[in-house]
Image (cartoon, rainbow, N blue to C red):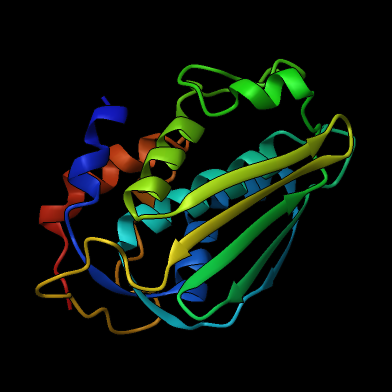
Length: 206
């Protein structure tokens, strides 16, 4: 169901402040942060792009949550998020010190219902498939580099102006005007799409 909702998530165009959106994503997984107490390093200017807020919110939520979850229990998770703004696109890197992946695991990482077998973690295995579809729906690309027991690095390249950003563009004001309610925080990061989509009508857009 979450996979099938991707197109509905991508149907809006927004002014998005990248750093604010990443911070909202981090707050969305406060339950996980409270449990694992990770060190999160955010090196990103708060520049504005024209894209889709909900899509980017879910992308960041999933990648940062995975980076924290897939770190050995005896190790403090360290997650670093870097942004590099080019002429027509933004490059975002999410780096962790987690369990890492083998070459074989890397080949299947974006396939639905696929999970890294090294650690037994809760989740449906569709999170990264949704992330890939959302990134591509924004006209971007996602790649990953990883070594077993040394961590992973996810790279996202998306246009400063989304491919479908035509017509009226909604303006977001405030630090994180669409910060999700606490109910969005759930045991599985993929549930964020479901909650955000159905709560959309309840939330006023300022």
